[in-house]
Length: 540
Image (cartoon, helix red, strand yellow):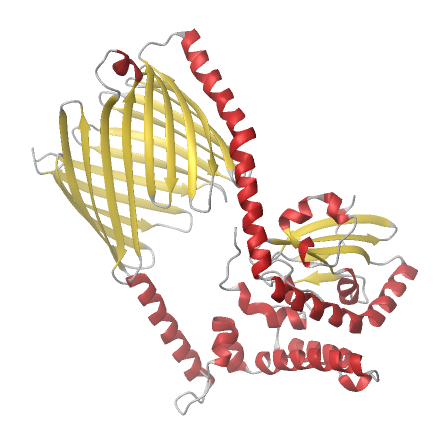
C-alpha cells in the first residue's frame, strides 16, 4: 500500500525547520535563527565538517527564503517545490500577493475541472446463478444469468450524469432495461436528480436531497410507471446519531406502501446495521455485522427474517491486491442452502451463487459449511498466503533495488546531519538525565512492517536492507528545555533534520522508547501523526 503523494509531500520544509504548517512569521524566523546557528559553516574548522555544515545550512536558508515570503509560501503550500521552481511567482501581472493567490486559485479550479471532466467511473456486475440439484437432475448447472453496467461522468462542477443498463435471463425467460440519471447540485446543501428508464421497468422520476442541519438530511422522491401510470412517493430522513452511527426512516407510498426504520454504525474495526420494514402486504427485519481482522481480511454474519425471507448468512472476504477483493459466503434459508463466491475489482463485480440443496437437511447443512470452510483455511494457510507473501517480498525487493541509490544518498546525508547535532544533543541529554527529565533512549523510523517485528528493534543495521533508520540522536536534540518533544501533525517525519526516508513508497512509522521522572515509556505513531511526549498513556 503506497502512501498518498499529494498534500503531505508539500510540508517537507516545515519538517526541516521543525515548525507547524500553521506557524506564524515570528515562529519561522525564530526557528530559522536556531537552526542557522547550529549549521553555520563558520563554526567548524575541519574541512569535512565545514562541508557538511554548508550543505545543511543551504537547505535551512532555502526553507526560510520560501516560507518567510508570503507569496512563495502560498505557492509552496499548494504546488510544493514544483510550483516554486516553475517561476509562477514572476511576471508583470503577478506583482501582488492577492493577484498571485487569485491566479493560483484560477489554475487550481481549471485543473480540477479538467480532471473532473475527464473522469469517468464505470461500474458493472455479472451474476451467474448455478444450481447443483438442477445439474444432478440432468438440466444443466446454469440456472440464470444477469449483467448490469453503468458509467458515471462529471460533466461540470455541479452536474453529473449516469447511464446504465441490465440484462437478465432466468430459465426460458429474459429481459432488460436501460436507465439514465442526471444529477445537479443546486446549492451547498441541496441537490436534485432526474431519472428515466425503459424496458421491464419503464418509469420517470425525480428526487431531491437537502441537508436540513449539520446532522440531518432529507430526501424526497416521486416516480411514475409508464406502463400502468401508478405513482410512488418516497421520503427518507437520515440523522447522525454519533461520529460513527446514523439512523434513517424511509416511507414509501404507492402500490406497495411501506415504512422502514434503520440504523448503521461503522468503526475502524467493525460495522453493523439493522432495519425493520413494515408494508401493506409484507414485513421483514434484517441485520448484519462485519468485523475487520486486519486491513486485508474481514468476517461477516447477516440474518433476514420476514414474510418472504428467512435466512442466515456467514462468511468473509480478503483483499488479494490493491484493487481486488474476494468473498465467500454461506447462506441457509427457506430458499435452500447456498455457497456464494464474489470477486470485486475496482468498480466491477463477479457474483456466483451456487444452490447446493433445496431442502434444509441439518446434516447436509453442517457438512456444506464445515467441509468447504476447512478446505478454504487449508488452502489459505498452505497455498494462498505463501503465494502472496512471496509476491509481496518480490515487490519489496524490486522497489528496494530501484531506490537503492536514492536511499544510500539519503542515509549518508542524514548521518552527516546527525554528526553536527551530536554535541548539542548529548548536552541536552545530560541535562535531562540530571533533572530526571525527558530522555529518548531509542527511536527508530522506517517501514511499518519492519517495526512490527520487535526482534528487529533490538539492533538496527545501518544499511538499506533494514528499511529502518536510528533517529535517537535527532529526537534528543529536539527535546525542549522544559522536557517536552512535539512533532507536528500532517508533516512527513522523513523531512526532519537527521531523518531520511529509508523505504520510499512504503507506509512508515516512528517507534520511540524514552524515560521521564524515573519511569519507562514506549510509543509508536504513523508517519503523519502528531507526537507529543511525555504522556502518561505511553508508560510501560
